[in-house]
Image 1 (cartoon, rainbow, N blue to C red):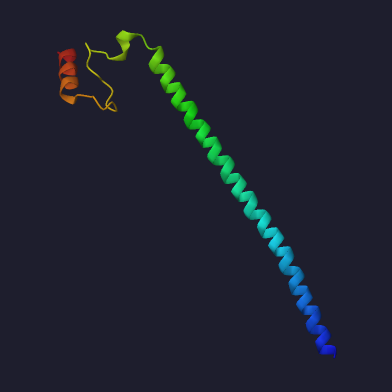
Image 2 (cartoon, rainbow, N blue to C red):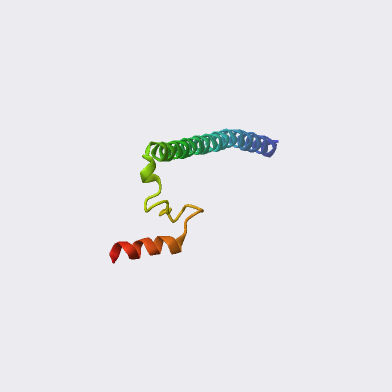
Length: 95
């Protein structure tokens, strides 16, 4: 009978430990998910602010500064960028 009581104590102790561990683990998982969500929202806000700043700079430039060199686009990231025309302008400037 004594061994049966010892086994029951061990079982209930293991059950209690498992419940406490589950509670602790769930809290840590939830806090990590909350942190990741907050981080994603912050990065999204940062990207929106960066886009807004870029648009503001683009809108606030005077028309003559938007494409320097007589209508030639000098920004290499622009899809309409013409490397040959840009190099000819640079060659004319140095000569």
